[in-house]
Amino acid sequence: MKSHSKKRIAFRPTLNDICLEDRVVLNVGGSAHVASLTSAVRAQQANSPNTFTRRELQSVYRQQFNAAQASLRQYLSTQISQLYANGRPTAEQLANFKTQAAGAINATAFRISSQLALLPRATDRLVANLQDSLLSNNGTSLVSRINRLVNSPRINQSAARLDAAINRSVGSFTNQARGQFTNYLTTTPIYQLSQDATSGARIPLAQYMAQQVVGQFGNSIAGLAQSFPTVANTAIFNNGVMSTDPAVQQAFASQLGSALGVINNQLASNIGVFQGLGSTLAPVLQQSFYGTGQQTGGGGGGTGFTNLYAALSSVPTTSSQDFLTGVNTAFNGLYSNVSQSLTNAFRYSPTGTTGLPTGPLSNPWGPVYQNFGNGFNSGFGTGVMGFGQSQAGSGNSFGNGFSGLVTAQNTAFGFNQPVFQGFGLTTGIGTTGTGTISTGTTGTGITGTIGV
Image (cartoon, rainbow, N blue to C red):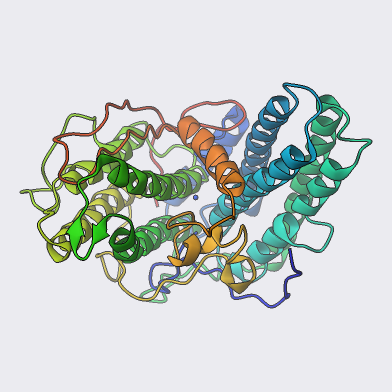
């Protein structure tokens, strides 16, 4: 990998700035943590202008770093066990593992970056420094460290030795991230910078962060909606006619499912910063995305939005124009449902535009990591991570690493994603269940509401 320039474009996922992103832990348990956030909620409900103290934020994000660390460690440990299942791996297998590990680390960078970007001015330096610590080619990043460990004959002679060495490196990064976050908290006037993006009025920090959650979700869905026609025209249309081959549609549905999984992960991660959003939020979000597996109709060609998968399954397929219009309606319906659920849970009235963002959406990685993973971060040109066709010969190890970690996290978050059956080829979608949004080292669920 070639070295990266230090110049960066700020990672700004706010709704009104119309920047794509910023998907991590839905819930990180611990009675002391819950108690501290409960006090923050009470302070906010008493019209306190600050909401969260710096100490409370330190506790919240420390647990988020720990949960991200545990998730990455567990995933890499599982892959190492499989790597050595039949003895010492070959050079090719080790090379594939390095690429796979880079994908998983990239998912971790995306996760933590999303959460940090909820805070005022965190994208100016903090998010960029964290991504450098994880992904840069400067020899000190986590990716670089793991590459050296995998290449070392002394370390790679056994699964146990490699696993232990990688665990230490992941732990070292977590300590570094904590230090970077502490520096941010002590040098940034977060309360003065907590301003409404539309009016410029100062608002409580919790409300500012809640607005960022909704704004990031809107930008991510808008990015997928904007890139959808380009990918669909290549993948499932031929001269304006949709393919009825189930295999062709399933290949595209797999790409769509992966992109939605990234958005699920981002949303769940950001919600995880707030303890106590309500036990009903997880099934509500699950329903908005995927339904129960039994609903049909709605969306682009129906009479009302039920869930995204149902809406997509009923869009008109007689022409590409009608199809894409119906798809856009389906994405708008999803945004409306989810944003309303979030604002209800956060208890604040949104300002500014309420529709799906339509302006240009910047890539969350800026120019430095946009093409990380042979273009994975830029969606292979579409702008949405992992969406679109990878370059010939680039292999799937990076994407497998990214998606593998994201899928494991989404399962813990409570998002159960069914298999989408295609457009106009079926009357329903695959069966799925619902779960409680939960994750973290203790695996406890989030309950209650947070007033902002």
